[in-house]
Length: 277
Image (tube, rainbow, N blue to C red; front, side, top):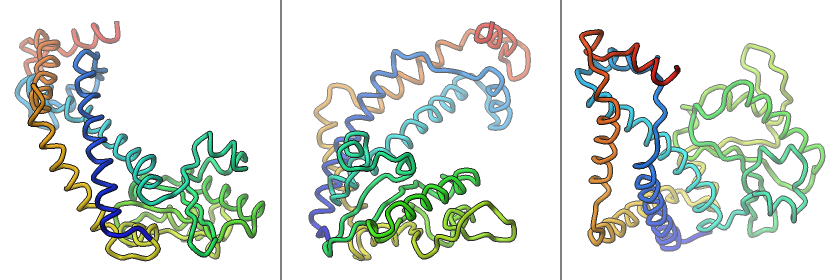
């Protein structure tokens, strides 16, 4: 089990790293061309009650960055915090080549978690309740069944871990991947003796040998890392919020010429023509 200090300090270190990486990506994106969907833009303009392309620019920049933030955070948990703070073995290509995890059904496994009693558990990591749909749930069930059949005694359990949310808030897809059919008869095998699902506090507790306060320590680590990042940000010649403002202004300037007396005061046909030809 990782102690409170180990979890907080470890998560803080990787929080500082992640925020610095997001800063680099933001600076790099200032020179990128953002992909704009010319069909979606007028719909968003209407739906959000916008009055100018400046407001639309703020919306699409926020959505664009949020996608990157969400993806980057998932990688932070998966590739940095779990292996470096909690000591899991990440099943990347190198690990799989050297540790006998070459079979395709291990594609659905993200980590091996080794316990003090010598047992090993497999972890398939998910972000939240909507991470998997029906097709993926069935696919996971089949892959887990192949692992159970091929290695009946090598792993004590397979865990599907959801790092935020709660068990009662998960969709029925998390039951289906265990082989539990609710009403409809899906093509799944009953794996309830071999596969468990943990979400939110239960997941973090399971990860750290049953310590129920683990998720609270993780959050403290994030907050500590934020404070350290702020101190470093004060030394930067240009702050992140200034880069964000420049980014929004550059998008606004790029599309500011598409004005007309049409719907929303924007020349949507011209925007479509310039993007799609």
